[in-house]
Length: 432
Ligand SMILES: *Cc1c(COP(=O)(O)O)cnc(C)c1O
Image 1: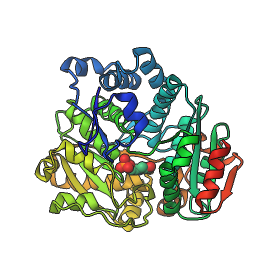
Image 2: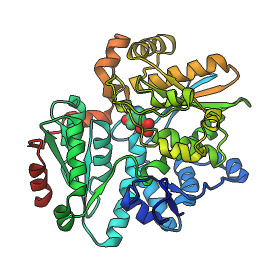
Image 3: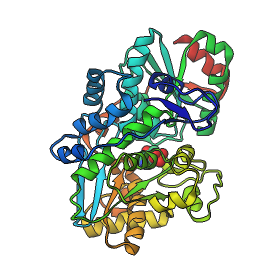
């Protein structure tokens, strides 16, 4: 597959360049030059396939022959070694649990695939690469875990001191190996600023090879299409139209869903479900895209005021809000509504949602109240134990911590405390 930049002002590139560049030189995001079609034979045969088989059948259109068949198989086998249950709350309402990976968030799907693909390209190039990433919590741990023990790659994570949850901090600082955590005396924005500065620094560029693992990378986007295909195959629709509600922040997850639909996956509608950071639901209503500063909420991984994948959504709908609206319904909710939903769903179905999944649940219910003929699925993107305090307050019961997250509680915090200055960061980067 070849990839073009959404800014249309950079050369068309192959997979390796798109992955290693992250962002195109003109500042645009890479998109595949065409969307492959899955055949009706594929869908007929797919009922008997595992998730890994499906990921391969979908992934080969994007990743082969740039990487060989064996390599793609082995990346998929290695990356997706956890379950992906589709749970029925009742015969019309389903939840797909995307949080059974090692860090308890759906970001494992993208980060684990990307890390392995990156590792392959880095090895081919014979260089050593340092991945630099700023995190407010979830991204850092998924990236760190994904890149753990991958040859020729070091990962440096910057996180704001005192501003991540205790479990998140353990996840960021307890990995060891090729993962180094920097605890920055500042905010998340400060961390992000330092990372940007590092990428622009000429001296650093000469002495090290820095790469980015943030969510705009095409290798993080495309693997997220796999579970939409899987979902459509697992779901018993009874001939009803499928609607999928996606809890959204940067809109990578939803964009991957739209790409899956274009490949032929029979999803009729998406719900773009957000917290009060509602730039895209507003766009769908008014046709105006107006980024604003993000507002802190209890679904904090979705606190995004300027969603980076919006430009990709525009490309997919020819910059036409009417076209986008025919596929995507927008809905936004307050923390209070989310807390009530967690409590109600627990009472009604004995099912425990996390705040992100709860936003998606609410969006689905709103859509289905006007479109009762649908078969509905919402995506659960984080394990409720990651947001223990909030969830326990809403359901008035203790939440069990699963073993993949419990492991982290025993980890010893190992972080280098740095001042919020570029000199401190540079010293660390040059010492690796
Ligand atoms: C990152 C994240 C999201 C938002 O996903 P996008 O692809 O950025 O829209 C939702 N839920 C959780 C738990 C996340 O970590």
